[in-house]
Length: 120
Image 1 (cartoon, rainbow, N blue to C red):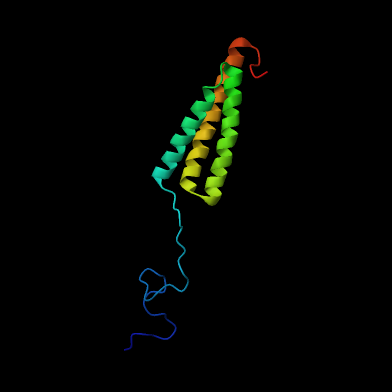
Image 2: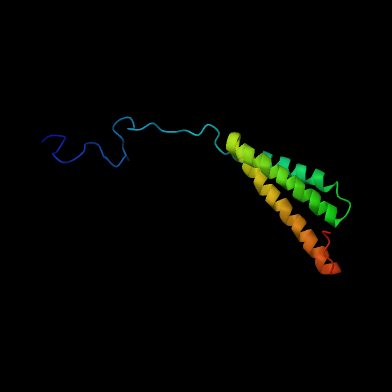
């Protein structure tokens, strides 16, 4: 009896137990997303939004400064995701979206309490 029977591939063709090197090269990501990168990007974005938010002296100016800071942060996140560290870009984008949500909630609460649109 031989090891190789006609019509069968030796050594498990499923790949579970490979018999040799892979047929195609394996691509490895040069900058994998890590939790530390996401956290550092998020922390920097939070500090960025807080610094811009502190420039506002009322609800309208706080909301406008947060919107401007968020647009700039998202541009930086896009550049990071495209050309730099994707983890940091992801953290920036997530925290920026959260900051925009907080600013929107503040505007809506002020609008509901005063019955006057606070943005202009």
